[in-house]
Image (tube, rainbow, N blue to C red; front, side, top):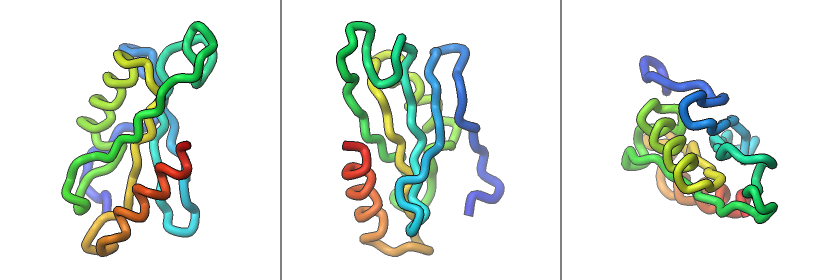
Length: 116
């Protein structure tokens, strides 16, 4: 499905200090997400030791195209995480036409349940 599409690997971004990592949310459906952690002393906390907010992000594409690894999506999420100091979960929901609705909705709900 991703053949010919550009993608950015997860990892450390020198420009923003944000670290990203790909994780599986549901092994049965194959739904995954890219986690983004802002630059801070301890992962998932701010410098005062308080938990950081979670941003659950769904890329655009009308449930037909897109992914968390697309360069514009990755750059945008990276910049939001760096400036807002949040932990982001950028969801790779199942795409149509291979997966008809409500699969993407179910994946989105599953991602929310997984994140919190």
